[in-house]
Length: 128
Image (cartoon, rainbow, N blue to C red):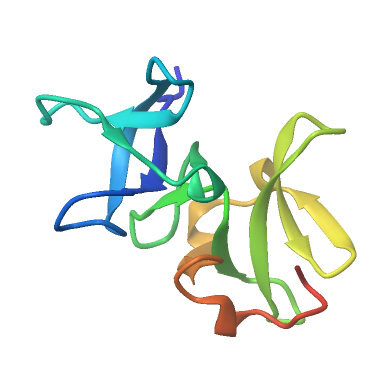
């Protein structure tokens, strides 16, 4: 069974902006929170940075999340973005206007290079 977890950037505190990983919920005001197994309390996260774990790891064992920028073994060697496809109900690898099912890749064929929040310079403006 696929592990269900999320990541998001912490909003407040001395380590604001740090990525946190765990289960996703909302506080009593309806704002998103993430709590990992090691934390005593959940933390508020920036809703715009929340991404779900795809259940897949890359060639280096790095977990792949929605919003990651990846390199694939495709011929064009362009970087691509991992996105949830609302129409397909699958995680997709997006190269410009071309989308492929993430499930069609073997872990050895894909490598996480960064993400759209920390490394926007890695992608061309026409890919987003």
